[in-house]
Figure 1 (cartoon, rainbow, N blue to C red):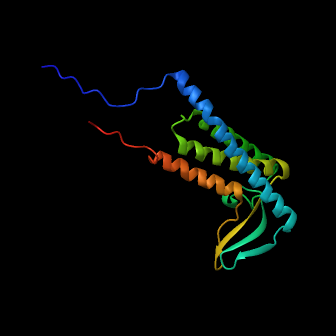
Figure 2: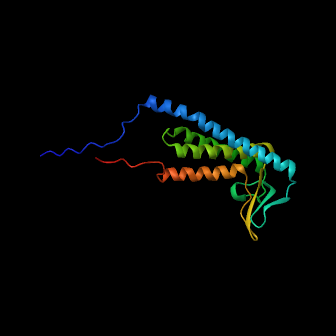
Figure 3: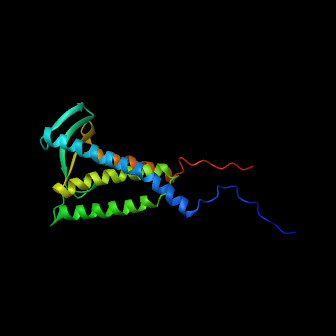
Length: 186
């Protein structure tokens, strides 16, 4: 007796042309998200530069949240902020630009149904681009959100950093299967 496996109940694969067309239609939303993040990030940084001298703070929620004007010449979480080496601003800008291109290339490969990951990568790209604008223009990133408890401070951050963090969380959630539904067997 010959054994024939039961056919799998899955959606038929979309033809390559249909998948490419679906990806193309998904891009305007992604681009709007990126643009909104960059604009919000740059607007808030401009306000901080104009209204709050570097190193000064304004308490928003005493004992928890201040607005503090900080210049981050390093990478995320202040890594390399204290390091001083020749062409540091140029090196940090180049590294950020390469990372931005790599993330954009990955984002371009996502299918239309990977909505959560696409949104996450749009948030990451918007944040990375916002910080890249600062690095290219000034050689540092303006950070200003200072969250703390007692004398313990988290690293100061900005809208771009918050967007990158939220985007990374969304990408991880997509990787863990959020947004997917199990197919029912009949």
